[in-house]
Length: 186
Image (cartoon, rainbow, N blue to C red; front, side):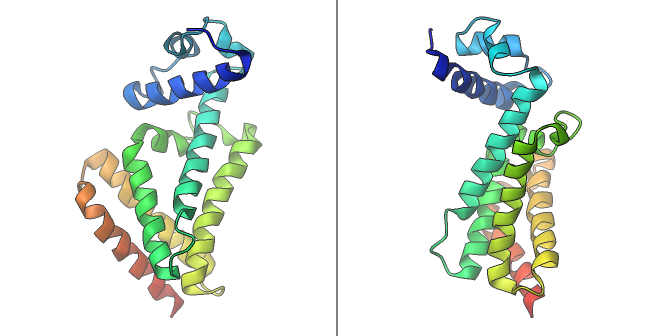
């Protein structure tokens, strides 16, 4: 399958994202991604300096998607938006477990070398903080954001790694976490 130069980068990232979810980061290589994308073995090197650079791009895409999902409920009332954001966070992580792991795996991607990815990670946290702030107010927003993030991230990690609950429990857990965070604004 041939791609125009402008499509090759996206084709490589699409193939890399699929391989990441099916095989994990350890088995992913620039060569295997090129083959999966139907491109020459040399093609990835036209777009990425190395495997870490390609993984960093996937991390950035993951944070951008997470932000998009959390912000998708902009029209909802503040508490309902917090519930929806928590649910979106959990759904993203459990729906894309390898990407989620990679987003927080500093041993695989040193974000200090990728400021554009750091910016996307910061934007995701800022999205959560904005949503939390509308529920708890300015005085409690920093602590409440940390609690919200810890709750949803920890729960998501437990769902992925330990299989503690299935998707049916997710909306109830999101509401529980939102109540815990909302209580910090009192």
